[in-house]
Image 1 (cartoon, rainbow, N blue to C red):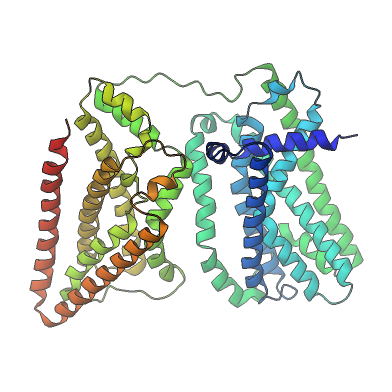
Image 2 (cartoon, rainbow, N blue to C red; image 1 turned 135 degrees about the vertical axis):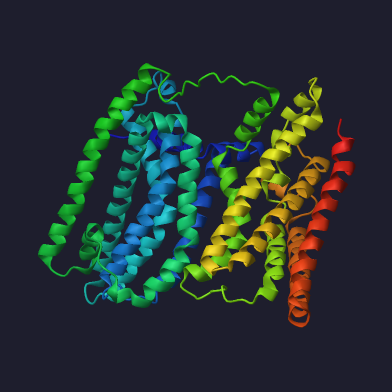
Length: 522
């Protein structure tokens, strides 16, 4: 018999290990114990309710009885998103916590420990999968007859689906952790998985926009069809076979997981070296290589990278999505007199990409107390900061180049127009990077707890919103004037004057900051 009080105590520990960064941030905000657990549970409930409301509103317009293909597609789509997000939860709870040895002298059974960790993963899966429960309830409501029986069937189907997704996620994690590639590149894989789930969510509207128009013609995905039959109940025989299929798959996955888990559990109990990567000693030829390696590791946090990159790509994505949705944005026939405007578009787009949330705006403050230590060393601070600036400038210019290529392909830029656009976005990227880099130095804040504190320096959210609104207004005014002049002046004037002005501003900024900043640093 399982003691529920002991089980709840183990679940609370697993909730704390689930998201170490969030736990650390809340503890620095003086939250601990039951107060911390309550905050985590409320956050999960809030995000789940929000997703259920948003997607439930979308699902209301669909007839899932006539569209079994749409039903199965939603199960597969949400299943992929769920597994991609729960992988790191599972890794943190089962492996990265390394808490199994601590339980040996305590009166806990391994079965209780395993159940508590699995229930935590189950709970973490609920917010993302709640829209599927709403869809299943809508399907039960749309079917005729035996409403309450279908609601019970929908609840059972949802419960079995979440269990199935938890087992799949666990099997995937246990398989990944055996590979040396995962052990040596955990942060890279974490970033890819987080980015993958975010990209799916960002592009979900494009998927739904087209899919719901032809819902009845969407092909059925066989692996998810048993859940549909379990709710719709076309016949008693179909319901029984569907239930047996689902339970059979769950049984096979559960058997395989128990074998894998028990073997890994015993290995972890016997040695503290399990899942610890032995890092090779790297030799560096000079100081610049050491500084470069340090700064790259400083930016290797997957959550930080995802937050910064998505913030930089949000506006370009808004420009790309119409083309991805099938709308015609062919610009290849634009007259040559407007090529200079392409350069101006690149310049105006860049400040919207690289603002207070860019890497250049936080790279110095990310050092935290390490900066005090570096300043105490017999090391040229100018050399240290220049090395840091070169890295962040190269990263942001690389991202700008990817954006320029993507926009050029999707919107069919004319060749020379794309060249002008690339020159504009790269020139403005350098200016924005040096501006926010110097701003970070002058407003450096090394005692931050949450990364958002670095984003809101110089004003709160309202001030930043007003600054963005003014920036959009000014850029819109400049673009309007430039387009008007391009229609009334000779083509050579626009295609010559605008590049010269941009080049002049870039050179002036370079010389200004060289004198006002770099020469002032010892």
